[in-house]
Image (cartoon, rainbow, N blue to C red; front, side, top):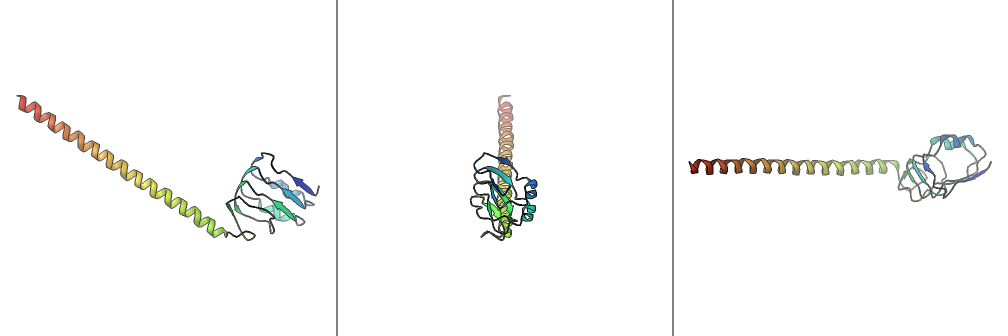
Length: 137
């Protein structure tokens, strides 16, 4: 087999490592599916692969293939053949984690403030109730 067209087949999951066993493969089209995870690094073993298309999937990580023909719309892919360096992707993930951390800290602070306000209000209400009761007698 020299060509494998699996585009637009609603495939999901990860790209199997076993594809690298197809050593005569010159064309591999996995575009327009729901693939996730990374591109297996052992695909570089297919030395005759000239057309490799994984566009319009949910792939992430480094592109191990020297010349991917199409890898568009996989915003988390990075590497030498693309315009995005992998450090940029790592930095992007760091930024996302920082934003999540900030949101969690702010939410925790707001929750703590709400709890303090509630306890203060209960104590104040209790004090007023005691004063009302003591004024009656």
